[in-house]
Length: 140
Image 1 (tube, helix red, strand yellow):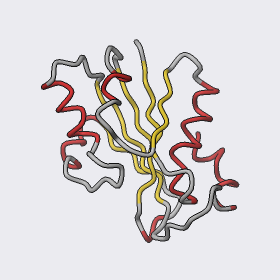
Image 2 (cartoon, rainbow, N blue to C red; image 1 turned 90 degrees about the vertical axis):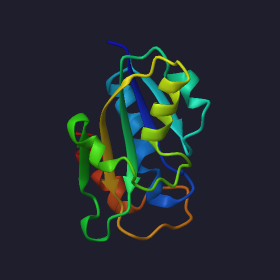
Image 3 (cartoon, rainbow, N blue to C red; image 1 turned 30 degrees about the horizontal axis):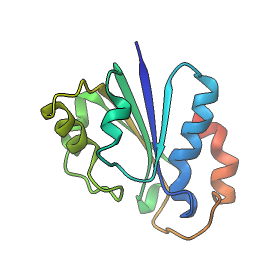
């Protein structure tokens, strides 16, 4: 099965870049999957993901009381999250739906991993020490 991993985040907003960092590390572990890193969900992403069988997404989520926790949204419960706010432009569900309507062969969205970064977004081109230290745990 052809697999694509989408890492989302903004690399200049501190811990918001956690999805990008984890995705890059996972590509080293699973070199056969395609890696897409992005700070926004744009229509050109449809060209990059077409013809893949399955897709995984990693992104930061803002959840004040659960910093560092990994939330896993599986295929069978994704419908509950169709209208969550996305800071990356169009949300992933709408993008995939639009792609199907336009005739693209869109991969099955298997899981979305949301890494809780607390509530504070700050300008910095690196992750906080806490997240740098916990990267091995988060990757596992």
